Length: 439
Image 1: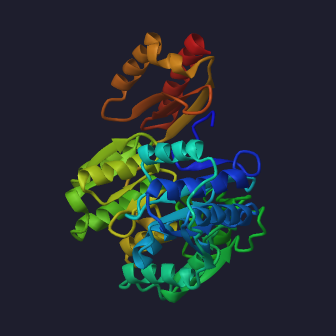
Image 2 (image 1 turned 60 degrees about the vertical axis):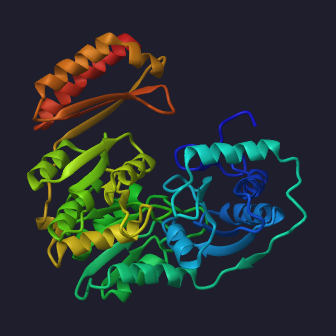
Image 3 (image 1 turned 30 degrees about the vertical axis):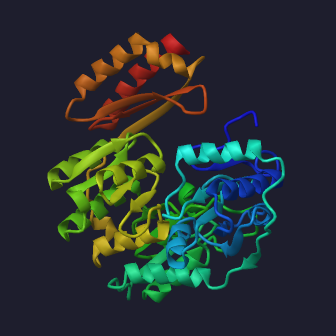
């Protein structure tokens, strides 16, 4: 095979070049062969990218060629997969999506019978089956059929979770990124009583995430502010992330939304273990707010996979990232943008997001420094000494984080401090050291 296929969130790359029909077919066969079951039941869902139908057909063919029974669930958000697994007792689910990436990319990720994404070890074993499979998958051929009612099932799960949430009188704008939430998000909010203005709900296969969604909030902010709406939510292409804007059009990021949700759940006795999991990128102000609220915080590497692992290890239920990827295990073992938005509204309890800050966000400065070898950071004592010196100066008031990129020849320098001036000054000094020693 020549390269590791699976990354931190399944297999992802340029559709038709790296993520091909041949690869999708092989992955479909391999996951069935790995399962050891003669006829596993598999759900396949996708987002709105033009390459989705091609990959859906190839995956389904691969699964069926090894004896699997395939249900095509159509266009649905990623978080629908674990909910439908539980509802219909599927053995596995496959999601075809590249999340917030441009339309030309696509990806394939698997969920197991327990509703969780497959472990690194399981993914490696599936790759071995791709290498070992010479074309024989057994004499049994499975079936492929379209599954009706999947969107209704997913909306139904959301309605059950938020049965006590009445949104009558709420005037909300939803930016659906021309992606997987374009039908289910507006419908869910309307059923709960909200007045909905929906943006980016006309997918054409190529406009997913294009100037819209959670990575491009300008249109949402303008629509909320100029239209006099109460609040706005933006989802990403596969619907597992969400960011908000208040009635003034100001961004409210994942750290602030997670703080609001954590305090809400704690006050109502629904925060298991009285703790929340975040990543190293989470703002220092979040940690201060949680300390004041008596909520323990655990910190992981960047990535929802690591947040989820920590939640399961600790028996906690709430975690998330600054990007708006919020996981509430009490509802689903996956980030769910629509559920996260509804959780925020539940926490607001009729209040105004513009007036309900749950944390004081510190100014943050992030600079990517081009270096010769990102791995050299580990042995750069001059950099580590500079980091220690600056961290000591911000002790109890802010923080610094200097880490290598996982994919590029970059070192990321991040600083948070009480003022913009101090943040910029500390960051500039650290960037200068990294450039001198590693650039």
